[in-house]
Image (cartoon, rainbow, N blue to C red; front, side):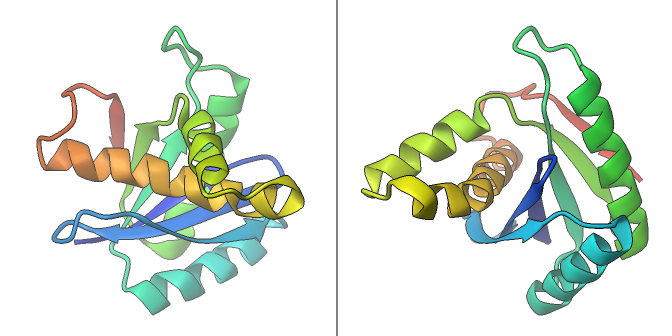
Length: 149
């Protein structure tokens, strides 16, 4: 199974890919958000290029595990994108993914605008890697996912 991981923000969508055999998530690119139709077209090209079969979208829960307004907005966006791409959707708890992505970026020595540009794609890879790890049993069970069809 091949996956496309998304880190959905208000202005950008970070994109990563991975598969269930290799179990390694790779950051791909960052898409500037536009109208949903334009975003769907850009993502459809990536889905075709990487033969993605399922979407894993980071769900921004509050630190106490509750869902706020941002989570509701991401769910609405993710459902529209999944429908447009005709792919199954899994919403995955993304708490602290941006913190981890920032840490990884700084470990490579990247700073400033260059590091911020790729941060969303790295965050998408962190989210997708967490999901892949949970599927292989190497992560703590109950990480908090929600399947949508």
